[in-house]
Length: 166
Image (cartoon, rainbow, N blue to C red; front, side, top):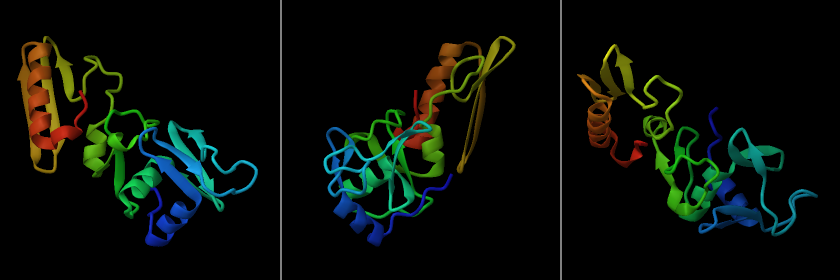
């Protein structure tokens, strides 16, 4: 799903109707917007693992709006906001950062795999690390899982900086 862009006009509307607490990460209503949107109340609810709210008939992802309010900036529809700790409900300022699609994808929890680790597959008694990025592909086989994890982490840090999740 591509999120709508947050333009200057939209940012001004959010400033008028919402208040963001960067310490708690909570968005609250400044102005009443109907029976659910009361002044001081939390804006929105949790849906599909994200906190979202509706304003004038349109849905918005709260973490994107929180980032824009705190940094007083706009966002294009293809610009993403990453949750550093992987918790999509943690909208504290220190946990939000702008990210590319690749950076955001790298900072995810591993799905169910044989090894339980991103970028590591098991081939017989060996463990293969495969990392793809815009700058190329890293493909290396190791005799034990711990060595594969250690060297994978070094390579991920080298390629993606602080965006990779362990």
